[in-house]
Image 1 (cartoon, rainbow, N blue to C red):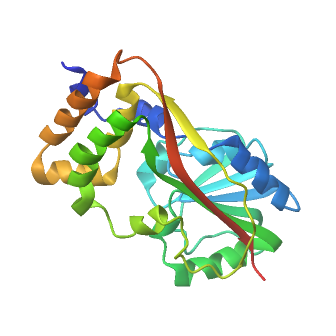
Image 2 (cartoon, helix red, strand yellow; image 1 turned 90 degrees about the horizontal axis):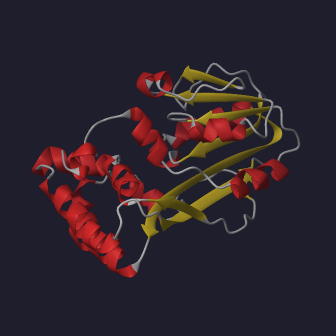
Length: 249
């Protein structure tokens, strides 16, 4: 089996290891915005990557996702309580949380229903925050190959909501006063297989493969491999990162 063929196997532990972890600086700043650090709600938590990090700063983490599969595969942590619930309608009591946060998912919600739910469950003076990452840079020659032979092919297969994230959430209608946030850098150290496992996990990649097959993915992997060098060599992946945070007036 060629190295790139191994990337097509849906092994949850491989996907988990290749999904970026969020910078500690992000959590440290959000903690400073909160009056208390008792309870936090991680909305659309996926497999719990943000939830387990939030557990370092809050006494209790409630983590919800609409997907039973995601919750079923979530990372177990003694301070994190997972449940299958839609973001727009939960069973949480009013005034429950010091912080409500959304990692990599704000662009998917029905805002007319979501914002009232956030306001209902937040404590007075509670904080809402959302963040996400999108494009990345490695090295000019590698970036050029990925752009020309991968990203341009994927273009028609992205859901339109992704544009909100790519634009840094500036067009999301937020009903609260935004707080100034520091510049936060998000970087990963990946070898070529970790990079391509991440690229393979994109929804647009899977849609594209369903439509035209996986030959384009194999092709870009082999082109990048020629300039990468030792396939085990880790390279710095610098990702575009955005964060918004605020308090309801």
